[in-house]
Image 1 (cartoon, rainbow over the protein chains, first blue to last red):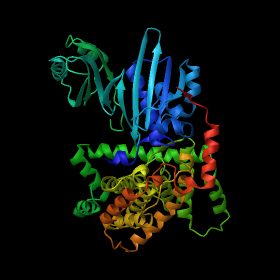
Image 2: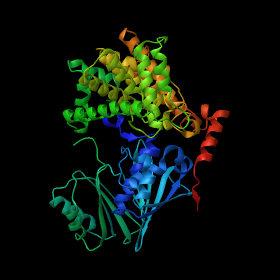
Image 3: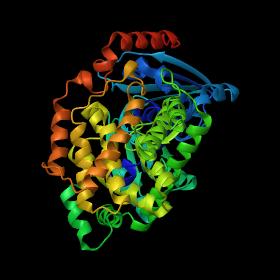
Image 4: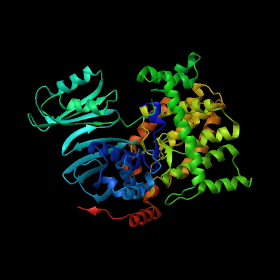
Length: 224
Length: 293
């Protein structure tokens, strides 16, 4: 808890969890997908499904998918904006046992590629991505974060961390998630310093067990 | 800051309270105090912009229209019981809270549901009494310090502590800010905040149809007036018999004891009245259907 979290965030209303958090989730999901999405099915859960209309949750999610931030004044018109940019959105409700009460599952699709991202709005505008392509993980997006998908093998963590060390990039936090020993695994590394695309590409070759690696830029704070 | 007691002792060394709060955060979080002040300045500017936009665009919510405009018209007829300062603060608070409901851009202070109170108090103060930006910024930082004590000892979320934790906390933060603007001591700031909190202890969060409109918007207006009175009482030397930190602890305990129906679930209080339920139904009928899978 800091002064800036008490007085803030600057956001489009009316609700930090149902509007600002939803915009942030859409934005993070778009970062996971990697570029401008063309078609997304959104499955709203819990109170997102129950009260989405009154809180503009649908518009906020659309805004985030368009790359708008939670304080972007274009959020109220995001559904129209999505249509005019050719982004096809389909909203559904789904009932999932044990799902976070304010959560959503995004299914991105375009010919030859699909991706599923599940995220929850956890209060005060803060969010977390809970799963990507069925992989359970925990990504808040507060700091710039590297996400890897790899086989669970010795040395993957050291290879990626070693490269970051050589680049002088400090790791703020990291977490590992795996299906089982030797099976598919994911790693989330939160970074103190932003890194660029070429560095991410160079990291992809750090270990043969790495299947995919991508960067989620920091949410962007008020401090330069 | 973890306690009002800590806040008072930090400000006792000749340091102004706003500077003491910034330095505390610098020590604890490593955030440069000067940059933090600048970032808070950006928040202050965003708050001012939310007032300008709210009063210019005059968008209305689904259930609540233009109460700020009604109040302004009434004030201009010179028949009001309250003085110009609390009324102008109330008018701004109503306008900004309505703007929030209408998907306008605001500063959550501390939450979106209570976003009208601080802009109302700070900028009405500037209009009526005159204040430099630096003074308002100092007051905003002090209000943040009060909010931080409440966040650390209790909560700022209606879903956890009811409306006492949202509009109540904003009112306490605003009362502290006003005491500071008037040159009150850190002790008076803490007591102004405590006096406000004591008068809203147990205030439930019962949003009709789950929207941030009824009763949220009018509570923003009314609690602004209450904050002015609490600040005046503290400046007059009135002290809370229960120490401010104990008041916040009591607020936390009351919040925990509140039944879930009164913690933002829209199942109790005004939301459960016949009219509240009927408004919920109207809204549900308006909503486009989601596809069930």
